[in-house]
Image 1 (cartoon, rainbow, N blue to C red):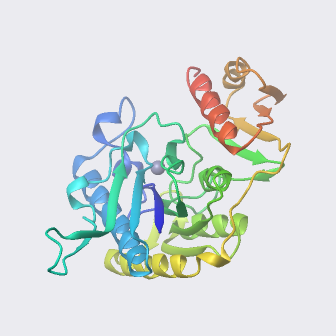
Image 2: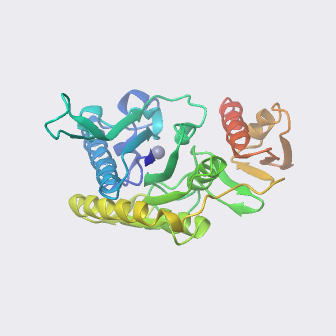
Image 3: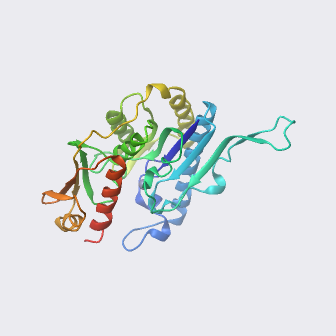
Length: 300
Ligand SMILES: [Zn+2]
């Protein structure tokens, strides 16, 4: 059985500041970075992903694909990633791979945080290191894809990255089985997708930049257990699918960004700072949404 992990970083245990999650080389003007803090956070991010991989293997998965899903998409430390499991019974000339691990890095991927979902036979998706949607109070580093998307609504239902990514998984008939991150990220994901989704809270947010955390080792233990439970209970989880004819609204922080988005066929202005479109399916939803981000990103 094959599992796809969409690995974000803001929801990692111990993370409460952009300084910890902005790769120094993509920091840029006005964005403080710290190589020391970033290196520590990416190590913890990698360990949390490893815990999810271990849990999946413990419950019978034999293949895991990790899709790096955070800024720049080169944050996981490849050498530290779970190497997979081999078994040698003495009769085969070579050990057999009974648990394989591959990983996807780099940005500009068709499905972005959900790249890999188009691989055949993915049975479950895990969200690790996830954060709450834009505007959420008491949620560390809450945002939706960029700092300037104010809200995303599908048929009026507000959702963050967890929602659009779940719709893309649903397009391929795959349920989200596990979400790890802060308490609000877990609550929002389960509220949208259902209580069958296993949630692991690694910290409780006090504000946008403060939280009380579990010890990282404890967080990783809970992620391992949660991942195992998620695969074991997979039959109770349903793919989250886009209703036919659904309307997607994207609220931005400035009218000029909507002006730019209107150059995309099918995108209309529905309020001063809001545009909308009606995708044929969730794959098109993600394509048009990413085009809106690209067009709007050219504006101030
Ligand atoms: Zn991120």
